[in-house]
Image 1: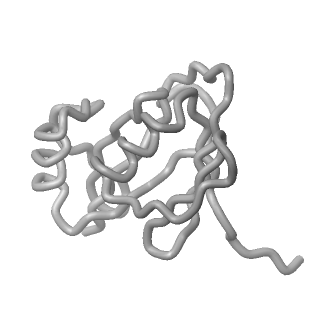
Image 2: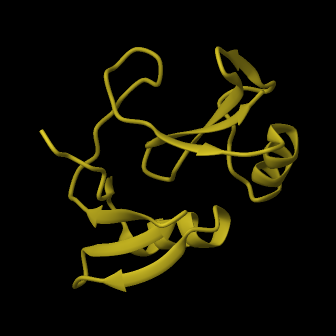
Image 3: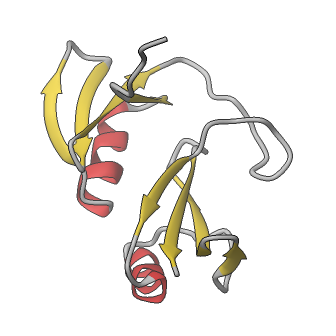
Length: 120
């Protein structure tokens, strides 16, 4: 096989609300709209496709199989403060340990989980 990553797709129920969350609160860049229900954002040269759908999955972060978007940071505590200042709810009050370092988890307005990781 000769495969490579070309994009990550995130399903949402409100495309405008999603653009506000990912661009204004998390700093993703808007690249292009493909009609009214599909937009391309970008972070670190990776295309993130936001697609509007009619219904959401209801997944529990630790109990269901799912794809999780992971964002890295050099200082998780600083990011946690900034996320709280932007009224983004953190899943954990304190950073959690993981094999490569520490992390916390946020949810976008549609219930999609995003891990914020600091490698140590």
